[in-house]
Length: 275
Image (cartoon, rainbow, N blue to C red; front, side, top):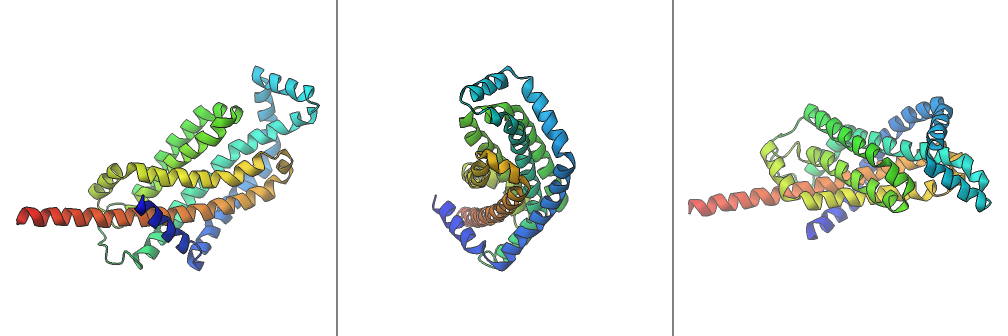
């Protein structure tokens, strides 16, 4: 727990450095332009598809009937856009995550390497191609799980607050741990460290997922903000980019500190055996 809090504090102190703030804008611009163009081009077809899908559910008919009873018949027109938004946001966030991993994470680790971990030996146990394959495979698994659980967290409120942070935490921990250790740890050290510290690493991922869910939960819960979706989505993308750079710093600090300790313990064991 002390290492979790210590690495959290170091990440918080570093994330406002000009270099780290600059790193938030590159993924933001790429994701905002790409997804902005896609949603602009396909917004109405997506709304129509979501409306047809919703009308095929008997549960949706019950919800519409409840709206009519409460005098909220106008809410019918908002449900389909909300579904599109709820599906689009996780995909946008995954895009930002992959961009952070590809563009920002190496810079974050180099930044940390010039600071408290300058003396840590680099054993180059990972590669850019290894990171790409690992990230894409892990993301594919996460998207399948997201699709399977989508009806739960769209229509049952407690799952909306529980499932996305857990999936996001698992995805973030799997992707960022590889990149946090790729430069300094050997492949064997990386696997050993992940096995040994799986729970704290997952905790960092889940906490970052909870932090990232706050802006989305606030505006998705307000139906009128759907009208402002392009503007709010752009702001939300930048917030996610900021949170993910902070998360990269948190993972980097925790993983490199854990690697230092693991090597120190291994060196002590070798010394003990020699004596």
